[in-house]
Image (tube, rainbow, N blue to C red; front, side, top):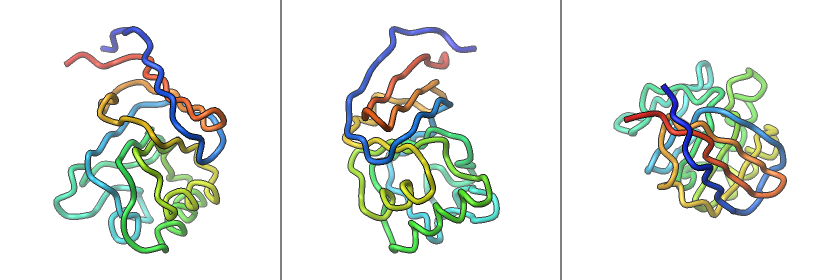
Length: 141
């Protein structure tokens, strides 16, 4: 059950335009899209990653930054073509690979956000045009 909380507004920097609302999926670990995320299912397949086994599709994906090959941009684009992308991406620091991937895949993206304030399961709204992230509600527990 979701309990309303005082809306928390986090101001960051716009990386990719657009608006999205959904449930946060938060990782304290960087994500490598090439080899770390399944192209067929959007599930994190990197062994030992805290999100291993979790699908990214439709989530508000919050993580510090990306890592790995520049092909990660193409992975995000390929996931978009399959309808498997996160609804939005929120980073502490945007790296070029994830930023380019978000732009070509049409995923709203904001960085310079203290992602420790966001918890997996929070209802979150992302405004990629203005660099805003709003935490609308928090799941109990």
